[in-house]
Amino acid sequence: MSSAPAATDFRCGYIAIVGRPNVGKSTLMNKLVGAKVSITSRKAQTTRHRITGIQTREGVQFVYIDTPGFQTRHSNPLNKTLNRTVTTTLTAADVVLFVVESGSFGDADAKVLELLPTSVPVILVLNKSDQMKEKAALMAFAQQVAARRDFAAIVPVSAKQGFQLDRLEGEIRKVLPVGEPMFDEDDITDRSEKFLAAEIVREKVFRFVGDELPYTSTVIIEKFEQEGNLRRVFAAILVGRDAHKAMLIGQKGARLKDISTQARLDMEKLFGGKVYLEVWVKVKSGWADNEAGLRAYGYE
Image (cartoon, rainbow, N blue to C red; front, side):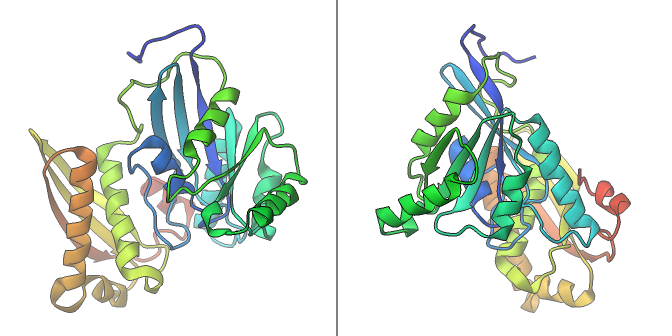
């Protein structure tokens, strides 16, 4: 039961953030929430789960849902699972943010646009608008996309720079339904610390190894303990081959040490306390080859 104050004109609802891979959806949600609740990297398919970020302001509670980038190739179980996460989220959304990269609209963007429901307001978010130096070109691009359907609003932003996010928030507020808050005022996500810890380690894996490592690698938390303000986290990185294990460990363990150090610092910032983190690498092939394996590691 939420302890946040209720009011007859209070607005609250689910806002789905959708778009093709690598348009900045996770960065956008983190900026809107004011905390890093969804991991980011340049590698496609970084976001694999439906992540909820919560921001409560006077008279309104925004419940953002970051979704995986919609996959146009459905040939493997993981891609199918990611796409099901997107479509399921859309059915529950009160508002949709359709995120595209300013100046770039291709077949993958068009396929996402086709999925969007006609029964809820859709706001077109033109991300990375700061990279388009000519305002006329940005306006022309906005008109080009707007011709494809009716949008509740069109907002050019820069998620990375925080440009025009206050305006975007204002447009979302206009179309959110009236309703009582669903979460406490100080909640920033509905995900557990254990889940967030696994995601943080996975982000560092992709940041340090990049495209060298297959996207089917994942992270599991084998033990998560809290003693006062200290959290003890024991994480395992699952890879498919011995060569991938060696790649992650690096010469004399240097790369794994860097991954662990950066992950620990991010956890301490997010959790607000000291973290003892141990990370090791295990070889486990085939976990993402079927839906049973995906469900075993928390994929919806």
